[in-house]
Image: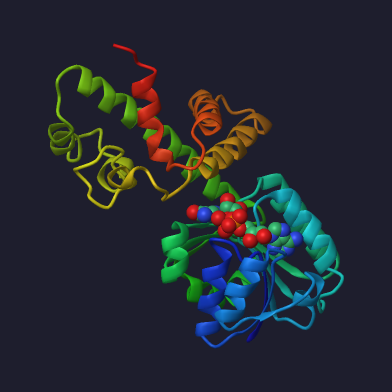
Length: 294
Ligand code: NAD
């Protein structure tokens, strides 16, 4: 399995494709953005002039695109162009229903689809240490593993088509909720005279402990690498958290779950995203502080 088509060479897809080239794969890539094309060429990929060309005569076709509608549009163009039996791996974060629809369309014309969204951000994509959450047939997962392990440090088969996306939105819903809860507690502590460091020293080893606190603390000081120490430069941008929480909220509704915190987290981040474009999602604490008056 040496010949790969790669579509979507943005913040994530660019470095992922570069890692595949470094590992010896022959990568034919496509992205309509000239800057992305230039970077991919410099990284050693062959840049094609249309999406369709990137899927011809490939063992594996990987997509890393902004949303589900685009994945479905691009699949409509790629599926007829690829050799039957091609492994189609979609790494974008998209709606579970769109992931299932994309898989059904690929299967209907004899291809082998996997949904394989990632966590780990641009740093993980660059270092080749992403976590892949994969949905699809066991045999197809087994065959894709070698390629995914070039781009990732951890590769988990979560279940059938769409279940990789399910893992992704469940994780990010929990992260969004826990960042809001942590930020409310920190602002309450500030008001009650509790320093950030004392809060951290107690809570980081007490029952309120969370990844959001110990690895991504939303105030400067306790965790030097967290975006709070760098003016909330992302990191994981608020726009992306808002997108993932909207996907989670839609899934809560579609499946009849009484997910009040998930819905509320989606609404809180949607509002914040309109007023605060571009910062890391942990900057939500500044919004809570601003809205808390004196
Ligand atoms: P991005 O906007 O930087 O990249 C998307 C790329 O797709 C762009 O370069 C765009 O030109 C290209 N594109 C648009 N239409 C295309 C087409 N028809 N054919 C080929 N390419 C096309 O986005 P990103 O940050 O790289 O994110 C990609 C996906 O990964 C999203 O679904 C996002 O939710 C997910 N994700 C992002 C992060 C992150 O930290 N950035 C982390 C985890 C998951």
